[in-house]
Length: 68
Image (cartoon, rainbow, N blue to C red; front, side, top):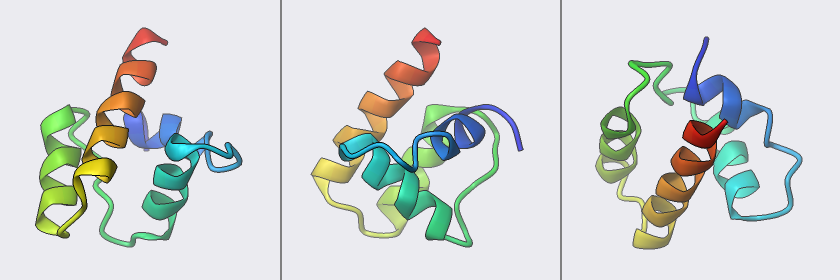
């Protein structure tokens, strides 16, 4: 496991929206391991019926991840 999923896993202790997403991803047995593209994770959340707030958090997390 590399890339975004690994990065997200390092944020499970964060007490903010990104931490919430990280905990949800860690608990989701179907969370994608890759490919490491925003669209992969967006599609997964959309298919799961995620709220707009969850999608917004995903985009926020992705931007933090890409900035390093």
